[in-house]
Image (cartoon, rainbow, N blue to C red; front, side):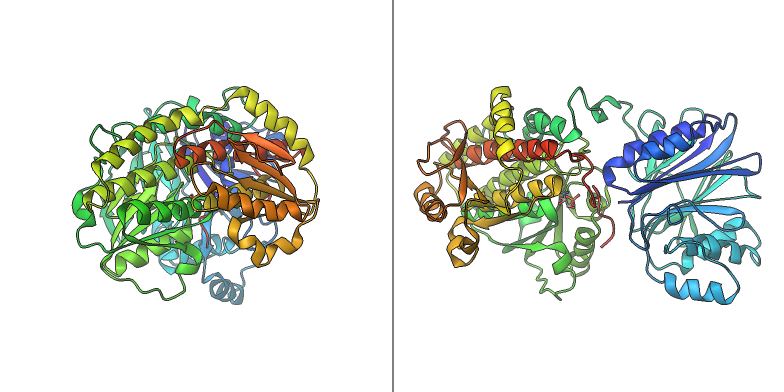
Length: 603
Ligand code: M6R
C-alpha cells in the first residue's frame, strides 16, 4: 500500500528520499515520485512501475545544501497507475503526498471545481493540495490554511505538504494511516510510513497518533491534536539496517523462510518456562470473566486465527470463533462483554482489522493484539498486546510472521488452559517440550529444498491446485494455497479434506494437482481415505507426510515426529518453498507480486 517519506535538512535529499522509498517497496506500489523544494524552486520527478524507473529519471538531479523533500510510492485506488496519478500532486505552488482514502473527495472536488480549480489527476489526493491553496487565500498563515484543510477531510490520511513561501517547512497530518516522524543527530527531520526508512538516519522518532498534525522546520517540531499543542514523546530507533537486507538470498521471502528457526527461538524466549507459559506483557486478569474468544484478522493472519481456534477449544476449552475482518465490520455483530476480542496482524496497520478492534473497544470488550510491529496502530489501541518478534518481514507473501503468530497463539492457548484448569500439568509439560522443538523443525534442510525445487517443475501448469488437510492442517492448507496464488498466479484453493466429496471433487482429473497434508499424528487414516478418493479420480497427488502414501504421484517427506504441531511447522516450510520455487520457475517477482501490497491500509 502507498508509502510516504519526507526529509528536511542539509544532506542530499534525493538520495534520502529514494533510499526511504526502497525501504517501503515491500508495501506494494505501482508508481513513485519525489518533489524537492530548494531555493524557492521545486524539482519534481514521477515514474510508473518499479522504483528503478524513478531512479533512472533522477540520475542527473542533485540537491546539495538545505532542502525539503517528500516522496511517495503509490498503490492505485482512485485512478489507474499513470504518471499523472502518481504523487506528489501539485497545486499552484505546493505539493502533497498522501496514503489512505479521502472519503469526501468528490464533494470537495466539486466545490473546488465550481470555484474554478482545475484538476489534473483522477485521485482523491489532489483535493488536499487544492483545498490547502484555496484556504491559503483567506488564512492568516500557511499553517492555519493547513489546519483548516485537515479539519475538512474525512477518511484516512497520512499526508505531507510542502509549499513555496514556507520553503523551510513540511506540514504533516495523520488519521487512520501510519506515519512516523524522526529526528537525526544534527536536527534533520525524517518522515516515513514505517520506521524502516528512518533507520540509519534518525536516532529517535515520534509514532504519530490519529488526529495528530503539525509542522516541522529548522526551529523544531510543533505537534497538535484537536487544535491543542501536544508535547513530543520520542522513542529510540534501532540503528541496525542489516536485518533489512537480503543476506545473500535471492529474495526476501527466501531469506525469511530460512530465518524462521532463529526468529522462532526469539518468539519462545522467556515465554516457554519450566512450569508453564509466561507472557510478561499480559496480566492474567485479562481472562477474568471471559467465556468466549473471538479472533479477527485478514489473509495469512486469518489462517493463524483459524489454526488457533482449534487449539483454544482443544486445550483451553473455551468457546472460540474466528472472523474475517472485512466481513465482521459490516455484519452488525453481537459483541458481548464476556468475549475477549483478539486481533492478529503482522503489520498492525491493516485497515479492516484495525476497524474491528475499534468496534470491539467501543462495545466495551477486552482486547488483545497479536502483532509483529511494536508501536503499530493496533498495538497502541488494544488493552494488551503480544509481539510475535519475527523481525521486519519484507516479502509481500508472509512466512515468518505466520509461523510466529501460530506459535504465540499455541502458547496462549496453553496459558489460557492453565488459567482455566482445563489441562493437566503433565500435558502442559509435554507441550512445553514440544514447543521447544519448533526451531529445530523450522531449520531448512538444503537437500529438502533442492528436492522441492526439482519437483516444482512438474507443477507449473494444470487447471488448478487443491491443498487439503484436516483440523489445523485445514488452515495450513488454506495458507499453502494462498502462498501459491500470491506469487505464482496459479489458481489454488484450500479445503478441509472431508469436504472434497461435497462438490470440489468434480474437478478431479490429471491436470488437477492435489497437495495433500497427511500428518501421521492427527487423523491420518481419515485424511488418507479422502486423498484416495481424489487419486481414484486421477487427480495428480503430491503427498506431504513422513509416511509413504502408495497412491501418490509425488512425495515431500517430512521428519517423523511425535506431535502434530511439529508436523504442522515442517509442512509449512515445505509449502512455502514449493510456492517460492514454482514462482521462480515462472519468472515472477517473488517479493513484490503483482497487484499486492504488504500493508493493506485501505479497506
Ligand atoms: O499485516 P496483516 O497481517 O494484518 O496483513 C493481513 C494480510 O493482508 C496479509 O496476511 C496478506 O494476506 C499476506 N500477503 C499474505 O501473504
